Amino acid sequence: MVDIDSETLFNGAAATLTTIAVLFFVFNVELNFSPVTKIAIVLAFLALVVAISQRTADPQLTILGYGVVVISIVGLFFDLVNTFDLGSELTVLGLLVLAAILFALRTRFDSQNRLLNPQQTRYLIAVVSVLAAVILITDVVTGGLAYELQPESRIEIDESPRERLQVATVTVTNPTPLPERVETPDYAACAAGDWSEYRHPADPDREERPPVRAHLNVEDGYNEHVMSFGSKTYPVRLHIEATNTTGETFRVERTDECPDDDSGAPYIAIYEGAGNGPRMFP
Image (cartoon, rainbow, N blue to C red; front, side, top):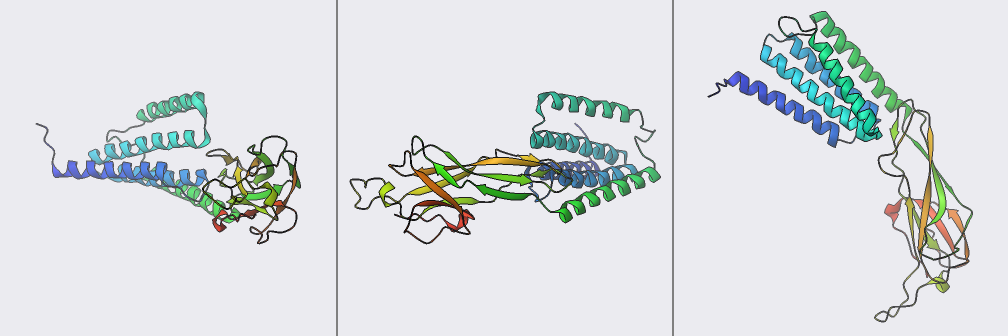
């Protein structure tokens, strides 16, 4: 039977909980910052774990500290692969590089399984902490991505009214030196003006004809990022639930909200803030 004393139990529990906390932060916590900032925060914390493992007189705690760092670094690497979609080749290459670093570090262990002397440990903490602080401050000060909605002046429905029409584009610009994740604003569209002749016939069990509805979708993909000082443009597609629209042309206007009018020529209004709820006019 394995003899586990209370010190071993508490050391193992602390190392396990620390590893779980780091991995949970890496894979589940979404910060309103650049992925590079998130990586810097994790590395600063792991540098502290390394410092503790180098300064303790308990060899068991030193080994467990190494375990926390290695597992966390591997988790951070896979999060990086998923975030930037690096592909299989770069993933394999990265894992091989990590393995080579581990083999290289193994040759630096002293008789007490330590990698760094006290002075080197202090330098590590200082350098990583300052670097993480600089990255965080840069991310906060420079701000996030800038989004510019550029609607078309008019759209023409050539075929089916159910087709998805490109009604605008969104240009995303990154003014910062850090890559930033794309999270486009909640753009919405509504049918403004008099759309009475384009309403579908009423259902047999309903007296009123259904209103014309407009749905907007920004095709910005999933987990998209804009690199430092770069830009990307995404199409904005529109779907109209209407009839008798084949061959018709409608103007498109950028508004602050869905216009509160149901008279005049029909047009498509595009505005920011889907939470306001699109209005449907007859």
